[in-house]
Length: 128
Image 1 (cartoon, rainbow, N blue to C red):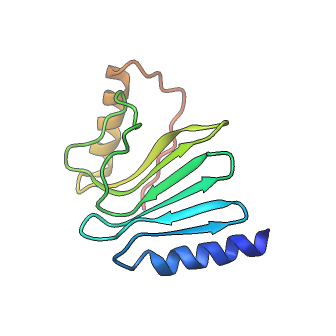
Image 2: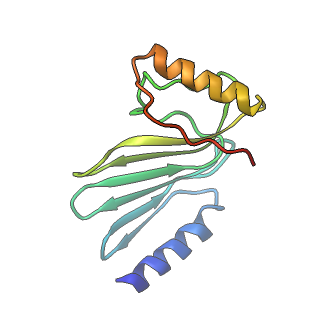
């Protein structure tokens, strides 16, 4: 089974640069690569039980299921968006890029989350 995953991942990486859509069926489920273009490309993994995970590359939009109470900076560029929908997890994550300073970005999220009712128990922040 591990060998099949390596083959599927290799195939997905090769297909991600193509300008077409393709679905590949595996023993574990289906892998669909959406057509790439100005907005990047999307890869959707669908398991035998219907669980899904979609990864959108650079230039993508917010996932439909992205929580409305989690702020996104107006100047932030979405580098990658991920949506998961299975029996154990449902949710989204973003990787963002911004020209704002580190301190301004941290302050934006602290305020934005607090304004939307989130309680911050701990933070981990580092500069690169």
